[in-house]
Amino acid sequence: MPGASPPNEADLAPSDGAARDVAARVPAAASAGARGAARRLAGAFTVDVEEYFHAETLRPAAAPSAWDSLESRVEGAVDRLLDILDERRTRATFFVLGWVAERRPALVRQIAERGHEVASHGYGHVMLDALDPAGFRRDLRRARAAIEDAARARVEGYRAPTWSIGPGTAWALDVLIEEGYRYDSSIFPVRHDRYGDPRAPIVPHRLARAGGSIVEVPPLVLRAFGQNLPAAGGGYLRLLPFRYTRRAVADAVAEGRPAVLYIHPWEIDRRQPRLAVGTLRALRHYAGIGRVEEKLVRLLADHRYGTVAAIVRAFEAEEASGTPGDRRAA
Image (tube, rainbow, N blue to C red; front, side, top):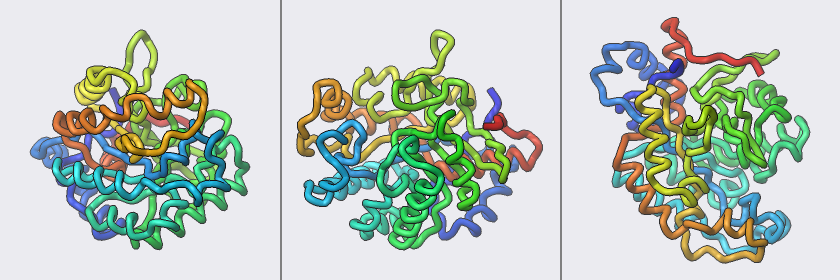
């Protein structure tokens, strides 16, 4: 299947700066011999850094006006994730909510200092279908300023809250391009009641827009029954048998497409407050939390993972060498 080859194990090393990093790594990625000589990564491991009460599922019980009055749990959960990643010698991409970066700058700085990529998850965790382009631009700029100030590193990647870039919000890609983002990881190529575009490619690809282009890095899916089934982590890791996610990763590795996984810090926090929501919402948010850490450790033991930036570098190197991945104009 066409698409970016999995990046090299060398991309696990922390970067001292985006420009220096690209200069150092693109030549290596462009060399087939160098790629073949190094152990390939299976894909990218990502963390959407937000509080439990930021989840869209809990919104009826946790209005934004009440967030500052609710117990914060994000630091302890992120610390645990950082320790797990250190134990597996894994570098990851942390998509940080600007709201968190403003209130927990030391946490964001710690993520960067421990060698991980820091990217943007927006500021207020508002799904994009509730914003217009001007409102999205304000949210994007406020988040980037807070995250870059805390991390002391440039932010080049973005992931929308609740995967909310799709056919009806494709205008957000234009704003991301205008704001200088290198890549997006928001388009889930599945059919879902809240998000997704089942027509979207399942491999990294470049989206051409009127004002430029941006690399899209989709989350992992399992191809079965002639369709894409979501398998990238989060609720799918919590609610479904472990063998389901393991199979999806194995298939992606066999096909040469990066397996992009994700998790939220609250998904390993067994002691988070239980907010009063309906049965379905409670199931979506709380079910399986007690088993996620064990599943996560097993996933990281099966394969090596790196950052989304490493996948983007590999994709761009293949473009430069004349073997680009899929392209789809949006």
